Image 1 (cartoon, rainbow, N blue to C red):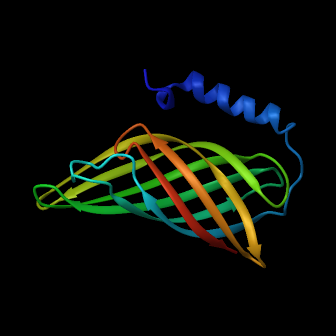
Image 2 (tube, helix red, strand yellow):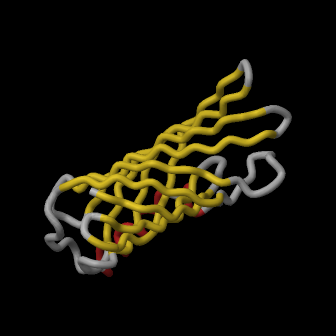
Length: 165
């Protein structure tokens, strides 16, 4: 059994985060941030080596809770027998733990992955769990580091990026 596919594991993780964080406390006002990030993937999708992935996200804080809704588009390309493109569109809910400056988070979500080859396109739904940290740099500029584990390839990616907004 793979832990990140288990609804029981996911529920226990989210309840633990809620208890450890002391429930919800008011945080910064509602708003949105943009994130550009990149990093390596855990699975090479038949490409014969580590792949690099680029990501663009829109983070929205819809209410005054430590909850962030993250709409993310991730992309990688590689050559196996022929050139393939692999975009992923994902939506996740992320619960922030801790104070106002450094904000660790855990979350879960779902999305779609496309595998685009010459003359053929396949797509699959996917689920994921995510964890990471957000921290401010200066003004509206910040940094986000994240690990995301999926129910399909690429099984995981690790990204580091800049956020603003």
